[in-house]
Length: 294
View 1: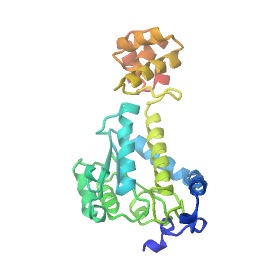
View 2: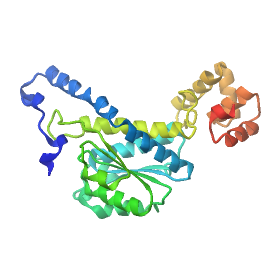
View 3: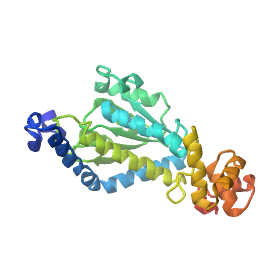
View 4: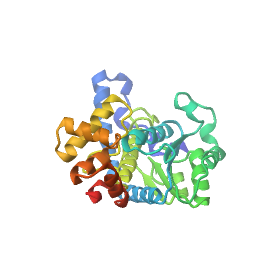
């Protein structure tokens, strides 16, 4: 029942919300938002387990698949989409499913989140295997679409993770790893796009970023597999080469072009004073890790 969920409770600090000034409303929201990182801190061990599962999937040739409805699903899709340009990973390796399909990104699709079967069907559509990790996201922790997906993922032998914002969440029963971020009552009762949505976004950031670092997508704190799909990212790529090797702009540009726009390759070429082919071989033998290659 909804009334038993902490995310659905009325916040006693904001009972007179409609009587407050704009500044008072903003201050209330800011005060509540500060609680989110503290709630996440209580789930760090479970988040670590999730990251390890995703890394294992990637190393085995598997995928990271997010599923959710409403805000939760949109956040999963957003994180999946951002992994492409940031880490040079294929959209077939990290993907997000939203109950009701991409149409539901901008408008509600009636009944989609209430279907156990649709969650299963979405995973069937990508031929789920036991190498994959499936992360079901639901602020309430009770969305049938997510439960159906997690049940099917378990049947297929995939790693399963549940992210919710209530303790004792129903979806936790269907996952090997349960991340339950208790964010509590929202400023605006039941509006889980607020604290709950913020918590989910932060945890997804942590899982995808730490997992990508775990498979060699960073050198120091630099995104060395960035895909330069626009002028800004081309310039960022050259700056990463400069920061990694201490060369000047012209030299970075020269090696960027020699490496056919592959930042990792350019860095290794400079640091080891080698050819593009030698740099690529070094990276391959190092599993894609720049630090191991040099």
